[in-house]
Length: 238
Length: 96
Image (cartoon, rainbow over all chains, first blue to last red; front, side, top):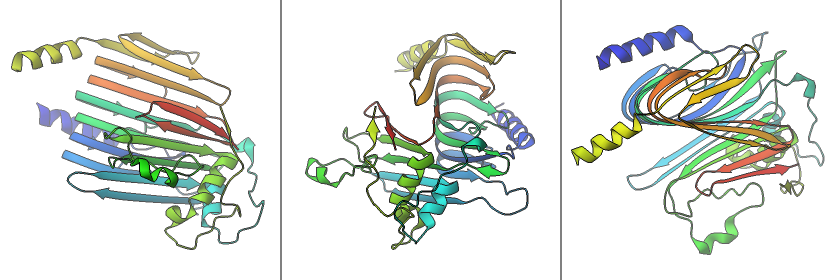
């Protein structure tokens, strides 16, 4: 019975496929019997994965996208960090020419609806369907996913920065000076549990954060980003 | 132990909820659902938690679940950064 159900889900998922007018980024953590349509894989047990679905432009060239995944897991601890940037934010992070005030404006008429989504389930059976569903697949057990869905409008991709982290390392009060003023980059847990943290940015904010995180995004030590000042303008917190 | 497990499983599976989008685009959730919505000038954040049998037929989510399920969607305006810290239960928005 269970085998038949999983088989049916695999067939169903493979028939649906992914939307061609959307860019997806996401992370999955499963402790389950799981069929993941985004990666086209099936799994029994523990699985941690990062996925990206990036269709080409109409003319066959590629969109500007930077992505980085860092997984550091031991028996007792786990540190997972995934970040990515698209559009002008990606170009900004990859740039080595720093010029003050070179934070380009993008065409704001080209936007579609941007969606940041998270998903958590502990279930006897869990099925997600639909071409636009970033959590497409089936599972029995524990499933935790995050996804960023960026629509492609008129063959253009808007500027976005996103970072997802899962960290079990404890925060030490003596390290309090190590945090930064840009979204607090310290992801260690204050509760000795598991800390889930998500950061998203759009427009100019995405360019600033991508520029600030240029080294981790590009894995190039001398990556400078396109914005000269390491410290972005002091944000207005609400 | 088995009795306790049986009771817990029975309670967790006793819920039922259905969500769908109607012809004019409104999203409906009917049944045992905890829904939370945060609307500010910068973002719209929609969270939905359910247990038992859940059927989703909305524009953004289609599928079904038997067990516990929690999902969250955030729509963010431009030139903003959003930070969600689930342990601290903090949501902060910064303007640039």
